[in-house]
Length: 232
Image (cartoon, rainbow, N blue to C red; front, side, top):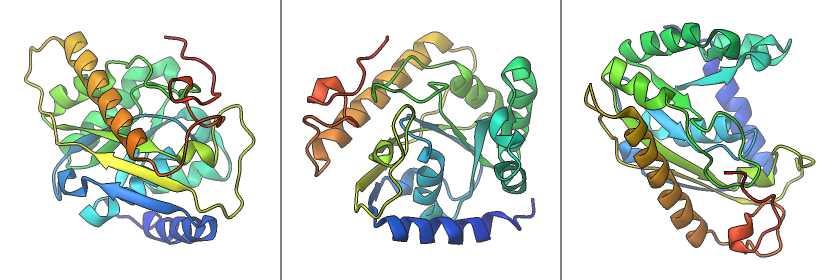
């Protein structure tokens, strides 16, 4: 498909990152396939997760098509950009249509970005996962690449005033090795295993994070932060 909108948006996004002074730490880029369909299963901690993980995938020469809620597509400014970048509209009242659209994109060789928790985790821990990522991977015959982002919640997240000043925050993204799922597997067990892997990755990233989590609103209670406690 023609990508006339994505390249200029990337230029603008990179300029925005430079303005913020973000210190990126991207690792595992070799796990992002250079061609063919794949799913990035990403934890969700802030409103800029899609842009940050999309940026992290650029060295692989790939544009990520994200599954995003209908409200974003309905926005007068964001909607045309989302459609121009061929992201996938998720209407929760008609989930089958977005599933079919994502399946079609995967089979045509696209990389799809999914936030399997379904919404931002205000505790900054991994919530329970929905079954979409594994089912899509099985249906399209493509791998799932577990992906973790950390630090983006310090810029803009749910329930906290956004911080768009130059801040020099460290922001981490990790791509794990691809996971292939055979047809007929226990989807519930696969989702549980995927969640456990994301939790392990997140803990490792947090341990390596250069800034202290203690007393911080953007850090989970488990690390001495003051974010809301997990609900599940």
